[in-house]
Length: 371
Image (cartoon, rainbow, N blue to C red; front, side, top):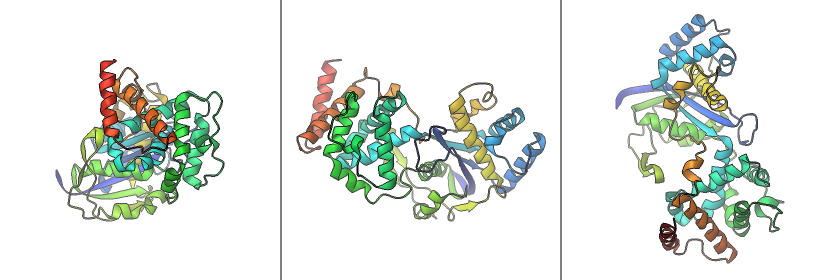
């Protein structure tokens, strides 16, 4: 572990607040760079001079528009690739993850670890996301109603989420999820009624996980961010980490034990990027990351795309259908059966959790004998 206080500069790209259904900006990236202010000033000054950058600061979205700017991005990554960490989020998949968190989890909260352990949350989020991406009928309506419910708290006229009438030509899996919502409406609404105004926004989650990652390497951190309303409203969460010397480790289900604390030397500072060039470097890294995922490998990204994978945080949320929706796998077939069992119990007004662990063992034995 390093000693002393490490400065961390952060910024984002693709921000659309609580709206995770923005078709023009499907990705959100939050970037952080470990660099001290004097070094950042000198480096940004050199980049502006060497690559003929117009203006007094670096902006990722502008650099991506022309060849010299993209070469400047490559220079930034080649110089600081070991000091940059980025979280990237597919917004629709993130919304599908929130769907599990606020629709299913309240109903199974007393034994939620059981469902996380078998990746049931990943199965539900990926199956919803798949339906949305393939333009399955009603998937977009379900997502829109859920997003509006979370943002506005209005649960009237939610026909796609809580309506009893069966929708014509709806896919069986969406129908199962809809039935689950209908029969567990009260538990679901009880969880949502006191929700925060930034409940779907991704900034706080992103920077928290990045600082956890940095906390493994640095004894104490001084963090600087571009101005952000969601982060400013979450001050109490981060202030609890000031002079936090203890290390709290929790079992992170499929990812094993993981720390959930870090050590800040002071409150997060919200600054103007013009005067804090470390934030400019973070902005460039976030914008380049989104461009790489949107464009793939092409002439626009060829100069810097090779650096992106090593900078990505393990907390990023991106689709992995092979891992979570391959029905050749026992795990995927088991999660499909678990969903149907939860729906069956909901319809019959039975306990969703009674002897669920025994049920899972029975399903495992059955599927093992019928590959």
